[in-house]
Every structure is written in C-alpha cells, then in structure tokens.
Amino acid sequence: MWHDMFVEQIPVAEKILRTILVYLLIVVLFRLTGKRGLANLNTFDFIVLFLLSNVVQNAIIGNDQSVLGGAIGAVTLVFVNAVINRLIALNGTAARLFEGQPTTIITDGRILDRALRRLGMRTSEVEQAVRLQNADDVAQIALGSLEPSGQLILTLKAAEQGATKTDIAELNERLGRIEALLRN
Image (cartoon, rainbow, N blue to C red; front, side):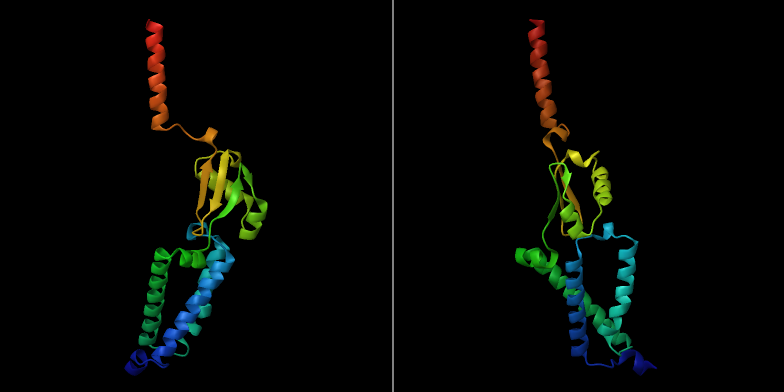
C-alpha cells in the first residue's frame, strides 16, 4: 500500500514533459477560442472547463496513481504557469503571443458585428457590459475594446462624459466673474 502511494510508476522526466505539453496545448486552445475572462464565462464555458480537467488528467499523469506522481504534475503545472506569467509581464512580444491584443468592438456608438462574430459574442452581452459601466446606450460610446483578459474597456464620447473637478472649478470661476459684473 505505501509503495503504491509514494513510488511513481512512470519516470519523473516523462511526467514533467507530459505536464508541460498538456499545459501548452490548453494555452493554445484557449488562445484560439477567444478572450472571455473568468467573469464572463457562461454555463457552457464552465462545463467545458470542468470536463477539460478530467479529459487531460490521464495525459498528464499517465498510468501513475501515486501521490508523488500527482505532486510532480501539480508542481510542474504551477511552475510552468509562474514562468509564463513572468515572461508575459516582462516581454511585450510574449504578452501578445500568449494573451493576444485588444479587439475593437464599438466605434463611434456602433457595435462592430463582424468583430462580435469573430469573438463569439452576442450584442446583448455588449449592451449589458455598457450598462454595467454606467452608460445608458452603446450610442454614448466613442470606442469600446475587448481586452485579452476579457474585460471590456469603454471610452465615452466627449459630450457624454461627466464633469471633472477642473470643469466645476472653471464654472465656479466664471460664475464668480458674472456675479462680480452684476454687482457693478
């Protein structure tokens, strides 16, 4: 019993190589399938994630059912992920390769249907995101882009933007001058 729990049944190098290859395969698959962040996953996306972990389990651990074999696979996954995250943080080319680039989905108050189709998004998802970011309508948006992380970044049209502290200070100054003119 103890022997089966702690003695790996396939070579360590093979276990590490299997884990790295499966990790890279999953990275490529997710990179090709889109930019949805975890916050934007729907029920079907969650189902795929749960089933995917089960599907690739044997590819990572092979016939090894030992605790040590599982630990080697887990440590390898965490290590490879940490290395790639640091590489992405330090190198713009690596970031573009692994994460991609933002995709413009709204221009001058209009949703770009072609971009949505390519991303596999629905217009209603964009409209909901616009409302969540305190705009009333897509027509108020000058530019909207979907970041590689799945976050939608919106820039309101100039006429739709709220007043800044500088704007209010300028108005107060002008109002003060008008009041001074009226007193004279």
